Amino acid sequence: MRQKALQEHSIHYSELHPVLQGKRLIAFDLDGTLIDSVPDLAAAVARTLNELGLPASSETEVRDWVGNGAPVLVERALAWALNAAPEPALLERGYDVFMVHYGAAPNTLTTLYPGVKQTLQALHQQGLTLVLITNKPERFIEPLLSHFELLDYFTLLIGGDSLAEKKPHPLPLLHAARNCQIPPSACVMVGDSRHDMAAGKAAGFTTLALPYGYNHGEPIETSNPDLVLNSLTELLA
Image (cartoon, rainbow, N blue to C red; front, side, top):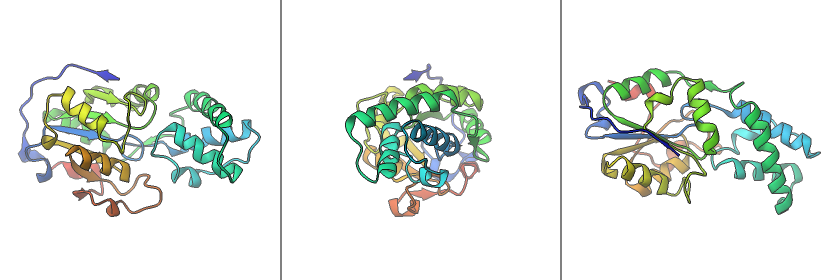
């Protein structure tokens, strides 16, 4: 878990979306919110299945499997390939193989969604505390953010294996609020999936949803976020 010292800023709410009025911290999901990482995840899953002697999945299938962290992604891929639940030993091996393949090329095909960098830069300049809360393994977060030149905007980085629980559990969000000394009522969760919305609601955060990410084929509106944004740039007035 990476954290940098908090700096005191005044927040210029007139330059922000009204939903951010009185807010001091914004937590962002990563995959499906800031970056489209499925192409690289799908390539790593396909290589993993091939190495295990199983039929390879496609990018379309992987888009419905992501969102709960790497172990669940691998479990879903193996279950699909086997048409049955994988044995624990195979699941463990599959996870190890996947981590090698994904670690070798985590940003070859991954792209930044439009408007992300300008929005993060503007929010940071306005004085808001930005944190990243993802279910992706922690080891991949900093290299990806550095690759897209986003790392300096974030005060705290929390991965799926950073704490005892991950989204949809509220613990990572509450941990971020506590560490940044900001009450949940002054915090926002921005994400693309039902797990982000559930974690945000349980933590007492305002929930903002994006419709273009990965939500297991479900419309994000069914998760009842406080607001749906078509683009992150809508956070700026």
